[in-house]
Length: 418
Image (cartoon, rainbow, N blue to C red):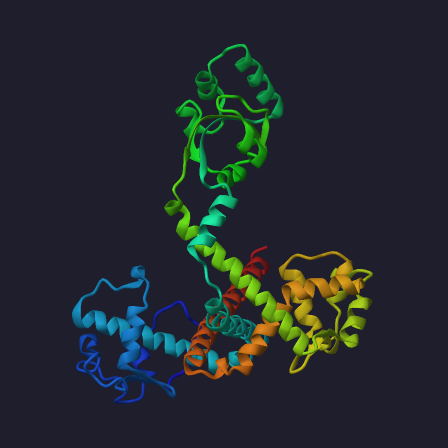
């Protein structure tokens, strides 16, 4: 069987070369390839074999259904069906090549897959054991609606300028009687509202705050009165409210319900995580703490020289598992935590670990105890995720190799043509 892709992932091979990668008789074009008949065929009907992987009619059907709209072929009928099958075969050939290269053992890929699997099983656990415990009633929604002040909407007009000084000068001109509309059209940096004499439209307290209007100003600025200069990003603005209305709860119901569900799930999850941490004796481990202590002088430089043993040392341990120094360092990098306290202060280390590491670690442990990773649907999801990572890693290697070859060719050309 031909398994060598001759180093070209992005280039199509001729149909003849592609077909040599299939075992004789395994590609049943014609009757078996007809997608319209897939629903009537047995789900295990084989349409092609690549290496040890058999491609079934049902798999081909799912492949086509899952394609993004822009990836559909322009061909019709049998030609389209052959194209889709060929695309699936090409994908399997790439996966075969990736496995033959041993990329399944690639350390970066293994780590990424482990992270993806952990996040997925945690999401399954949340959906099953946390979300059902949260109930959002109509009374909850109405109370939230009132607490956030969403019932009141005010019609905003604004003049946006580059500096506080400009805003003050405009404020003085308004005080002398110059029309707001004229000044807004001539001076506002917000082109859309400037064309409408500074009119922005109705907004509630929450939206006003996102536009640089303090809650106190929204609540107390009298209708028609000009505000003092207010910061709006790097610019400044003068605002007026020229009308108001009562908002309907129905307008905000869906958003408030989603918000309350999220808050409720967080509360339930926090309680569950704390209980699990207590039951599993979550605690800092002396071995990993000693490794971090060594990094306090110059963390950025010293981390580069950490041995594999130091990186794998347990920083936190619990019944059934541990969190390594390397996982902790990855978390610091992910959240851009550069404070030396993250290496020298045990209380600080404990706090940020409880915030960024503990929840997912405890929930992943609970998911594993519940057998979620072994469920067929989860196993299939993880396999799909692995295949995506394999294809991505193979492409990265091919691009890197191509760049290296081109750089070498350029170097030789320069040497030969001084």
